[in-house]
Length: 199
Length: 291
Image 1 (tube, rainbow over the protein chains, first blue to last red):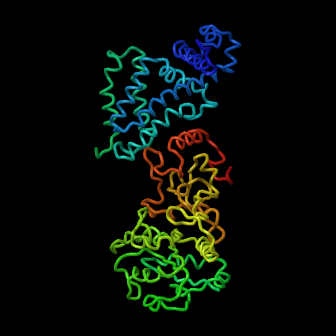
Image 2 (tube, helix red, strand yellow):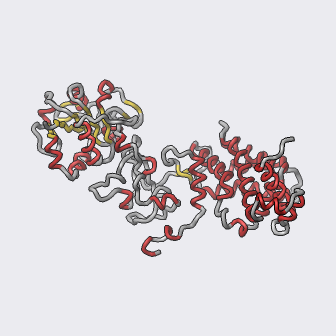
Image 3 (cartoon, one colour):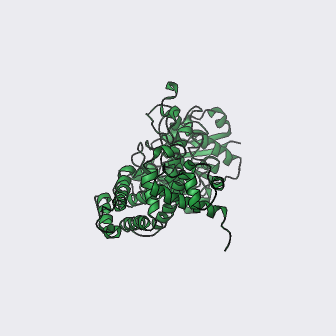
């Protein structure tokens, strides 16, 4: 087997740290914990990430890039906004089920520990890959008359707040059904809430 | 030898004729050029004379939109242009109405348009003469841009023109180029109140400078100022779709401007603007003298 490249090693560290941060919490997880779980020395880990804060920021960028790339594929399809909403909901829930640590990290680390991210991740900088694709989706849907024009954040909050809330409830094991069960209704609700008055 | 100019008007408001009067070196200009006819400057021929028969002309300047059944001194303007066009060396469409139809494309006259274009669509009417046509769009035309174009034609300098026959010398740039508010543009600070020197007007106030071709901020009006410098948004007056509705409001879809700076991909624009918007630059948020 080929020796992993530096980039692959970096990604591997991020994925492992992501799991620990999401599961154990950001502050209770230390760099030695992460190094130990990867069977590498603390010193070597610092060769890849100079601090826990830097690692935390790189992870959120990594998640944003991952979800952004998935959304970009949807944005580039020649389908209606209604169909795109359905696909976005699906990919979000699929990620939450198959790689729950990604969404957990976003909700429980990134959004809950803003002090860690205030330098270098101001505003939406570290989640720009993801937010940009949502913006493009909204802009195009409004431009072609499918969705109603409104402030970006009122629409963004409705869409992402809803999905985040459902994943959170799922993580708390409050939902009686699996996430997939809700996809059709949630997509329908989001579309109904955002659609233009003429449709 | 003076270059002979003939300035005729289709559907026009006289705005370009008046703007031309603001050319600061008129005496020098009139040593090199002479008017066979001009609507508001003394010239050798009257309007009635020039519409009836051909008078020797080097450059035909057309101001205003052209339309069927629109007459000047009892002659159809289209017939007047057709009489002169084959014989002159060059034709200059002066202003946006003569170039794209402008304000007067909304007139009740049938098939009102610019000489070669109706907005972006080529018009066949004068196609035979299109190689002669140079467009100097604007509402009104910038006097320096018009005169400098005329000098280039007089000196037979090979003009490089864009798709709408506008000389690239002046229209390859955007009005954004040279705008004194670029700091505010870079950091996405609109926060503008009309007449103030602070704030970029692109984000909320309808400024079209980043996607409008022209040299307004490189070759200043009356040698001192431009719309954006004075505190008014660029209205995109050199472009085919001028005037767009709601000139003082930025058209947005879910908060994202519908028209982006030329050639900037939407994804790149949104990523970049997301980054700059994250920073609060207090110096740019207040009036400069209050900082």
